[in-house]
Image (cartoon, rainbow, N blue to C red):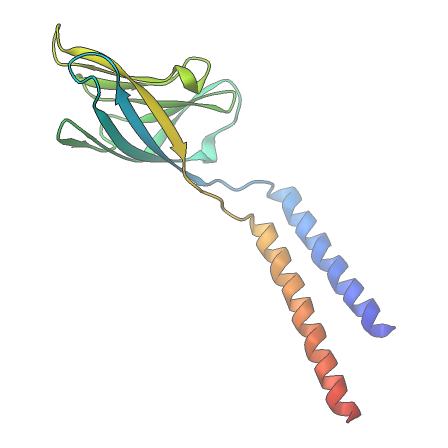
Length: 177
């Protein structure tokens, strides 16, 4: 009976600690990674496709109103030139909803986020009056799951209880023999 009480006490303490720390630290910021593809559908570059990626830290995202978060990393090759975080690329949100990339590193092209929905986001380019066009942008969220610290602590505590229980059983069996 004592062993069962000990296990229940340890499990209860572990769960209490887990819930208590979750109360004070309910969410963790994470680096969010996207890949994107631009499919040009008008102008002199019609039919061309371009790919890239970007990352941002969602720590400052509140989910209220219109928000713009600075991009920490961007990689995009357009017409043989590589573009990075120069010219302040940002990610646009409306009430926590991702609207796309806002980025104009050169006067030749821009990523325009949607106004109300991601489906409105687009790409535009212009190399002069008769050499301009538009394209669709498709964003693909990469797997960025980060386990909550409280989950990790809870799993470690549960594992420790299991290992302790197994070791105690083995020790009791050796004593009986």
